[in-house]
Amino acid sequence: MSASAAATDSHDPLKDLVQEVFNEYITNEMPIRLLHITEEDGKIKFELVDRDFVRKHFKEKMVPDNILADFAEKMIVDGEEREDRIRECVKKELKYAVLSHRWLPDNQEPLYHQVSKEPKEVADGPGWKKLERFCHTAKVVHNCEFAWSDTCCIDKPSSSELEESIRSMFRWYRNSHVCIAFLSETADLAALQLQETGKSGEKAVDAWFERGWTLQELIAPLQIKFYGANWKPLIQGSTNDRNNRDSKVIMEKISTLTDIHMDDLESFTPGIDRVPEKMLWASRRRTTRIEDRAYSLVGIFDISIMIVYGEGKRAFFRLIEEVIKRYDKWDVFLW
Image (cartoon, rainbow, N blue to C red; front, top):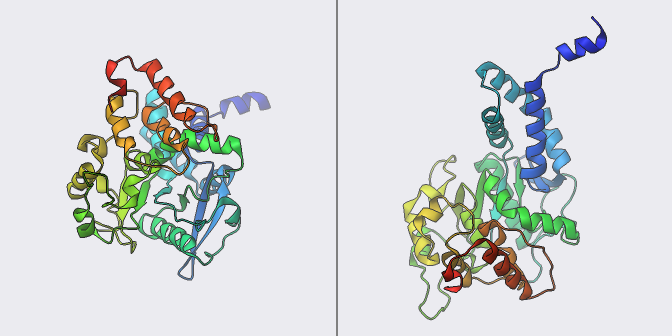
């Protein structure tokens, strides 16, 4: 038998498929950059890494090989069903946590250019301490070696990276293992229960419920865990209890504060439907950059528009134009 014939005989289509799904998932479904978290002598360290690092890391942990062995034993039929199941397994193994929070004022948050590309302990300052507590919670409580924060995991001076990040952010939150929602103005569950939205709009709720981007961060993740100002979970439980969507006591209160129906809080599907209702959710929220009022909604409506900071209110007009192209009901402006 010739060498080429032997190579053909040894070819494994299932192995190729697993490797292809593995690579495609990292490239298309995971953030461009992540924090790789390690623990040494009880101290949390993290470094900023790219997708190539993530790919190499999980290959060294034999993730593709283990998935291949599992599917070879199951003898699952060929076709889309097998590929979908492989993708589900890849997602389950490639875990990362995401942070949802209100940014600190006066440039206190650590930014992309300040985060080390080598394992390093956190620097001083409230923003760094918040990032450290997030990474500690992701690693120790939720067993995630990787984490993502919008403060430092986006190279914002790169227009192409910023645009991809904004367009992909809903999907990144949806694909996360858990979203860690930090309510910096809420001490505990009892304090959350006392919050209410005033009839005249006076502030009586945690600022997290008033920001534009946190709307997406509330409804996109499949699993979300709320933490109070002291980084203790609002709902106490086992370390594996990472999904507060199952907690009616929290979700009913959030529904009251946000006017988002319980069905959407428990399981939200993005798309061009119920436009007035979704616009009402967003109308009570603010963003620092006026363009973000539009950009923070592209994932919720599952549409795509160009990201052009500096265009001001024109961004929202372009969002509405794109919505109208696919929404033909008369109530589009009733919000």
